[in-house]
Amino acid sequence: MARRQKKKRPPFGLPKRIVLLATPEGWRHSILTVDGGMVCGRLSNELLDPEVALDAAATLLKECARDFHDNLVEVTWDPRQEPWTWTGEVIPVSGDEAVSADSGG
Image 1 (cartoon, rainbow, N blue to C red):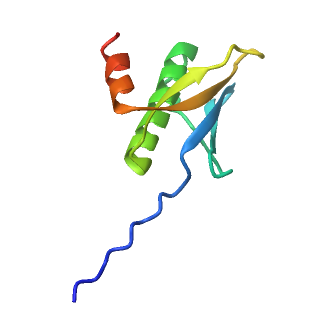
Image 2 (cartoon, rainbow, N blue to C red):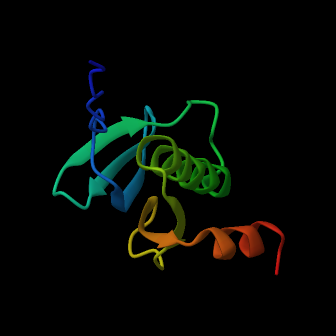
């Protein structure tokens, strides 16, 4: 008799929001998940430019959602309220929307 393989649960929930902030040690992030969890970490110390850091954080979220949850997401950054601090919303997208966003139209 063949054994059923139990699907392994992802190590954290689907990302919902992100906070990115600059510190003297580099860019730190906190990712809030739909199940109420939080994942914290940092970006590479080589990313000094804020625009590059925002792109890197968005890419990190997209890859995590795809690799761990088989979901496609986009990140929409909120208008900045404080210097060196950004918050963003993670929005699930369908496959068709992701293709048109990547192709520029």
